[in-house]
Image 1 (tube, rainbow, N blue to C red):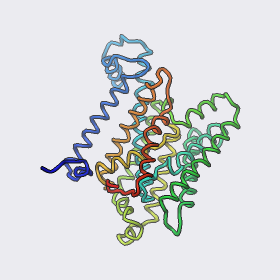
Image 2 (image 1 turned 90 degrees about the vertical axis):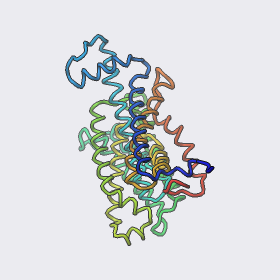
Image 3 (image 1 turned 120 degrees about the horizontal axis):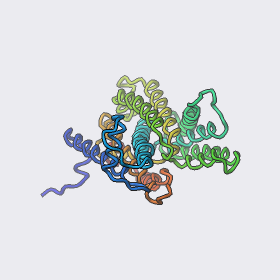
Image 4 (image 1 turned 120 degrees about the vertical axis):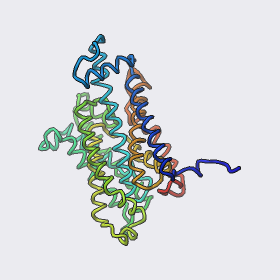
Amino acid sequence: MQKISLKNILPLKKRTHYILFCFSMCLLLILSLIVSTLVGSVNIDPFIIGKIIVNRISNAEVFNPNWSRNVESIVWTLRLPRIILAFVVGAGLSLCGILMQALTKNSLADPYVLGISSGASAGAVCAILLGWFTFAGNYNVMFGATIGALLALIIAMKVATINNKITSTQLVLSGIAVSALFSSFTNFCVYHTKTGSDKVNTALYWMLGSLGGATWEKMFYGLFAFFICALMIVFFHKSLDVLLLGDDAAITLGVNLRKIKSSIIILGTILTGIIVSISGVIGFVGLVIPHITRSIVGSSHRRLIPAAILVGGFFLIVCDLLSRVIVSPQELSIGVVTSFFGAPFFLFLIRKSQHSFGGKS
């Protein structure tokens, strides 16, 4: 009797198996949404939560509001926008990781490892503490984060390019150096500003990643940006597949490399900048999720992108829940939680001798 192992099953080849996996992730996602809404420093009856949501969505008193205003505020103002934003941030960072890995043909690439997140953080901190980019009005933080992310990506790619090719070792080393450079600049800005001020305290907590300031406005803003970027990424998923074959093969197959790479850089930079501007620096999501998802569903971006969105959103909702309950009633930065899972995984990838995109490495 043939022994059944994961190596024989994964990556999933049959369409029905892929659909079953996505359906299972949807169920887990719904379950995580429910649990995250219920659990916190204050435990609330699930029936009350359901009644509050129905009343708010219908904008009418379908159920008699026999609960306190504090309970309603916790459910509707604090928890729900935060949970949805966690999904958006997790899914968005996963997409950014997919783009960076396709661009560099390296499974170690992601916005955090390449220093893009640190660059975005530096730009956002400059907007918050130093008052830069005021011409952008209310979008100055987002604009600063996007500019910082773009600058960090350009530096990392330039340093890692040898003879018009990007090597894995150079990419990781340049990313670490760029991350350290922008982190140092960010720390200088923080300590240069008056210590103890509200802006400094906000920046310090935000630099480690936090969804504590989530609002419905930020949630809709992030959701809209994510939806537009995700739609554009799905549009050229075939080109992303071709990129993995190498530049020479892509040119032979008629892919406009300059156009597709420029699109990846622009989309990845904008999406990273927007995410960092609303959630701070959250590391390793863009590295861990695409790699794990690719090993399950395969390297085809037509399959990978939807699956990674579901897995990434689920992962960050769980991490956010842990950040709220581990040191309850205090709150742990979500970046600490994601790094706890992501850093060992990153070391595991470095330890392996090969890094491939086909699910087996």
